[in-house]
Image (cartoon, rainbow, N blue to C red; front, side, top):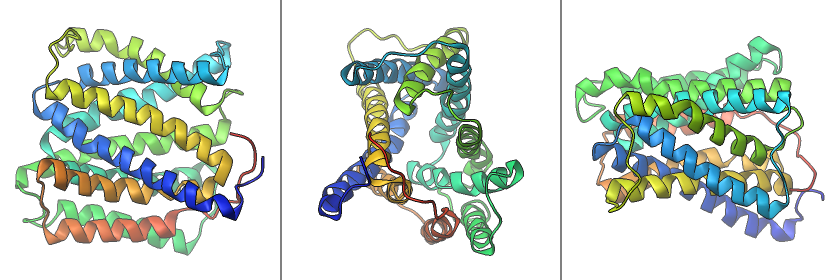
Length: 304
């Protein structure tokens, strides 16, 4: 299948907006879960379990099994650690202390980390335009961290480095996968395998740390927030993979702008968060930086 015809662009645009709204919604949902007392390791475990169940169902519907050869298993372990276990453990801890809207803005730094890593690996070329985008993104982070009145509580600033671990991990993950591939396994299968292995890795950590979450009812608000966040993430990721096949990479990667914007709006609507002018300026700088850093990739073709 070739890239979608112009006649279907309206449908794809609506799907892109829905993806951005869905992924953006996960930020305040995570904030609700950690705010009410759940520890990061317990949340990561159940997110992986729920994601594994959803993605297994998706792959069954697609008629796809789960490859278990050595190369595939290595990919699953790497993606589990770099894509979920490490970044989610740190970001969930940071989310307890930082506003959800700020966390949504921090997530937008992934391309800022990805660019220098790609240059180091030799998989991307230098350009002044993208260097300017990187500088703008770093300026956005500085506007969150440096001014005295940027955050509701000045003590929150010490958790910004912890929040930045997640986008750094995502940048490493994308560069490694882009450089060495996924051993012939498609993206949904990779996420399914990584979710299963990640759950096995984090389970003893959750238990030994005393953060394991009892899955038995009754379910309160944090339980519902966790289930919704994990399910949304799995479904939207599967939609993302489908859209790359239909509309190409350039069109689909624009979801990053929507995730950050919707994350801020959802946090305002659901959590009543309000931000200083520095946070709004940081959001503007991050959006402009993303525009410059995003690579001008050729459109992909192929079936979803």
